[in-house]
Structure formats: C-alpha cells, structure tokens
Length: 77
Image 1 (tube, helix red, strand yellow):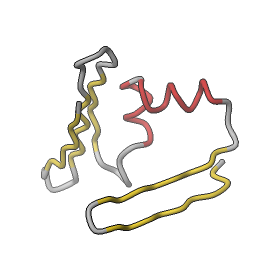
Image 2 (image 1 turned 90 degrees about the horizontal axis):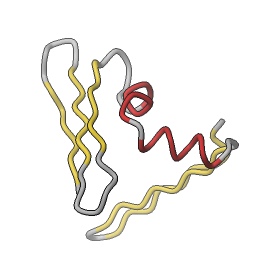
Image 3 (image 1 turned 90 degrees about the vertical axis):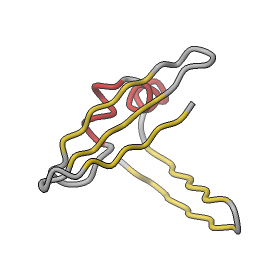
Image 4 (image 1 turned 120 degrees about the vertical axis):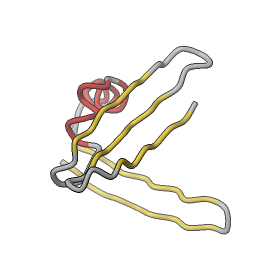
C-alpha cells in the first residue's frame, strides 16, 4: 500500500519519493528481481521483460511492449 508520494522537478533532475507500508525486504525484491519487476513496472496491458544485474558494473534493462507492438525501454548501470 502506498502511503505517500512526492515529486520534485528541478532544471536537470527529477526526484520521486514514495513511502510504502510493506517490509523493506519485499520492496527491495520488487525492484531487484526481474520476475517481480515485470509484474508492476509497466502500465496497463503492456508486456514487460526485465534484466537486473546487481553486481558492481552491472546493469538493468526493462522493456515494455504496448498493444501496437511499440517497445519502450529503460536502461541503466
């Protein structure tokens, strides 16, 4: 359950803060395990795939495919 959400916009930064009423280990798993990330990250009926590599120098990749077949990808290190 989401208790609070804050959004801050600056010239070169977007900060999002959310407070959840859930155990920290479950929240950590939802952001770091690909199969759990796919269950909540994309809106609506998008098909989602994810890769998460948590080691130093690792990366993440989340691809969301909409009903028309367009793919939206988020990547990072």
